[in-house]
Image (cartoon, rainbow over all chains, first blue to last red; front, top):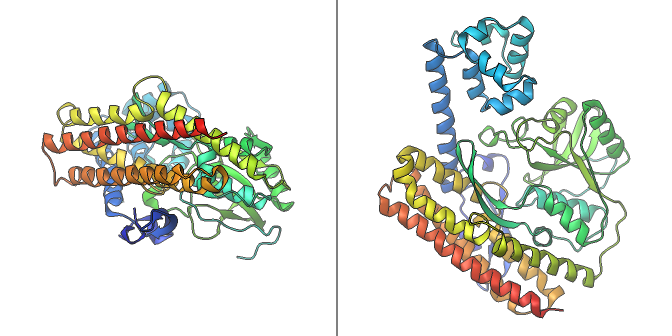
Length: 133
Length: 343
């Protein structure tokens, strides 16, 4: 890539820092330049976020239809999975699987609810009633 | 920002681990080191697609070696002692860091980016192999030199502790690391030997790694897979997979073209030490493959943007990777032959 070919599109990172890029001059000699972003990259990142949004929406529908507990919804919102949730809470994966079901969620102790709520950075009230504003 | 305990100079780099390695070594006395030299001595260039494994529901692809290796290998090559510590206790992790910082000794930490306050939200996934240098402390604020950023940033103790103890894959567990202080400038001969070793190891990794999904053969493996994605996964998932490939290749840290440009710069910067003119031609070959990686990314974006959507478009994408695989194989074979000639 040549210095004058460095893309200068609007990237998410470009708002806070220009990125270092390695480029060549006409003789093939390397130096560095800065890039504000590249649409090809931004679009790839958008695809990833689109997938995240789709998962959150699917989880929301499951919760609304009584097929999953609000923990699933907030887990997706924090882009977590079972492994990450297990390591942050210290609970076993099989017990989290229970908490992901509405019946298991009803049986959660106040302490456990609080732990989940803190991890998801919401109140216990919001954890119990995720879609009320 | 005025630093109290140290005269550390912030260094912006393309990749976080290269940047941390370079800035720390320079700070403690090795001025000959640059980002490309650290990357090359640490044999940073790589390619692998781990089969049967998924990352964020997409293919597990990496364009670089395992986190931590660049720092370790570069220091070893230069005869620099390395200390790396993990902690169970959060208090102890912060306390030991404080002791070093207040003694004026900048120290690197491995952190997770999900809670990294100064990062834009769009980049904050649960990625735990980010590296930064803690350089100073004033009150409850830590002064951070993050190689991705243009200048120093700050985080308070709660925020720093949180990212040091991020959870999930590659959990940093409070990890901090640093080279010895008052280092001796390496001789040109030491630099030369370090470079040769780094190149040889990189040739081995790219040419001779067992199995078909790592090194240059791994690139062709992904190329062949891509041709099947449309029918096997369906349009939507195939697009997500391609987007993931491009993110791994171009996302913050690679310097463009999946590290191939940094490697080209490394070969050029090796010339004063190895004195082999073939390095210039080889550097150009890596520049060329880096450009081809970027052209492939543009093709991929056509697909995930929905502009291209036929099997022929996927075949075109796959063929590009198969071509890159052949070109990189050739380049590494020539590089290996050249190393055989240099004494």
